[in-house]
Length: 273
Ligand SMILES: C[S@@+](CC[C@H](N)C(=O)[O-])C[C@H]1O[C@@H](n2cnc3c(N)ncnc32)[C@H](O)[C@@H]1O
Image (tube, rainbow, N blue to C red; front, side):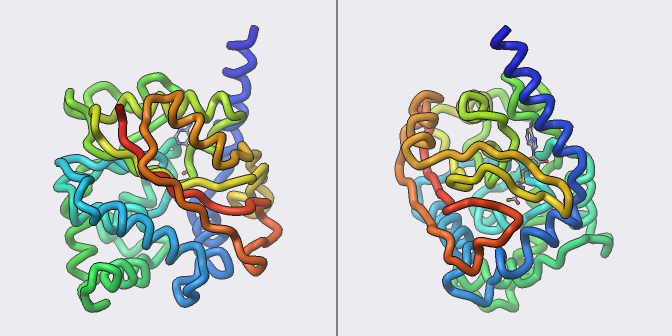
C-alpha cells in the first residue's frame, strides 16, 4: 500500500515535468533577477565559484564525470570539463536532451547563449574571457553522450551506459528535490544515483532549501520537497555518502520572486563510502 503511494507520487511528478519546455525554463530561471552574472551577490556566480573550487581542489579526479538531471543547461559542467576526459549529460526529458544536442552540434538553434557563462568560468580559472571559444570546444570534445535518466529507478541509467567501475564523479543541480514528491523519495534517489558512482568517487550536489513550489515555466507549477540543511546531511549519510562540506547561499530579497518560495541554496561536496 505504502509502496503504491510512493509510486503514485513519483508518477505525478513525472507527469508535471512533461509540461516543461526548455526555452521557457531557461527564460524563467537563467535570466535576471534569478541569474545575473553582472551582480557579485547573485546566486549564479556563487554556484559557479562553488563548482570551480570543488573541481580544482585536487581531490576530484578520474576519467568520467556524470551530470544527473542536466536539464537544458551546461553551466554545471564548465569547470569539470577541464578535469575529466569524459562527461556524460543526462536528463529525464527528451526535449531537454534535444536542446543539449543542438548546442553540442553547434546548430545555431539553441534557446540559450552560453557565452557569458563560459567567459565567467574562464575568468575563475585565471584565463582571459576570450578563451571561452577554447572552453566551448573542450566541452564539446569531452561530452561523450546525452542520455535518459530516472533518479527514481534503482538503476537510473541504461545498463550499458557506464563502465563497470562506475563514474568517478557525479554533479547534480536542482534535480533531486524538484523531481521527488517527498523527503523519502529524495533520499532514495540519492541512494540510486550513488550506485552509479565508484567507491571513493565524489558527489557535487546543488539544491534549493525550503522550497515547496517552483514555476518551471509560466503556468507550470512544480511541487518540490522543502528540505533543510539537517535533512540533506541525514539523507546523504543514510545513502552512503560522507560529507566533506556543505555551503549555504541565502537568497537576497531581490531574488525572492513570485515563481518560487526558496529561502536558500545548498552546495554539497561529499564522497561515496
Ligand atoms: C530544476 S531542473 C534542473 C536542471 C538543471 N540541472 C539546472 O541546473 O538548471 C530539474 C531537472 O530534473 C529533471 N527530472 C525530472 N524528473 C526526473 C527524474 N525522475 N529523474 C531524473 N531527472 C528528472 C527535469 O527534466 C529537469 O531537467
